Length: 158
Image (cartoon, rainbow, N blue to C red):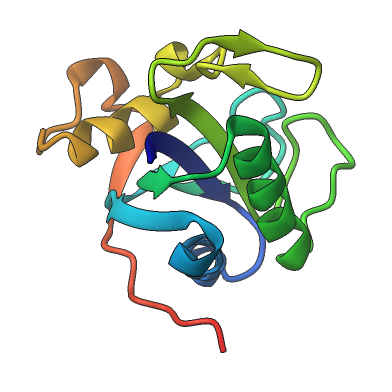
């Protein structure tokens, strides 16, 4: 079994519902993915393309027996099920699911780079990750761009 960290974001429609449904769709032990930890929800300003609504972001710690590429396919399947459309680079989305790390693996393919190449510079990734590790404070560096939003409610997919 391997440990992977994922980043999820939503800024369209029912943002909390989109995140909750994505977590429920990812938590499939029978398919080789178990969501072990879910960070609190943080609201953040968009990065890159800024003419859009604010995002809600979380990070997950997952235990998986899927390979990195199989995990990527599972993440993309969740995006499809929640009607993710890729029209504008860094544009609005119902859901975005990114693999941040996968054990100590380093890989760079056309479809997947691990660790995620921009994760270190993004408050919307680093702050939820810090909270997964037990830190209960937003670093001063990101106080202006990352706001605590709340705890994600449980959601089941029927």
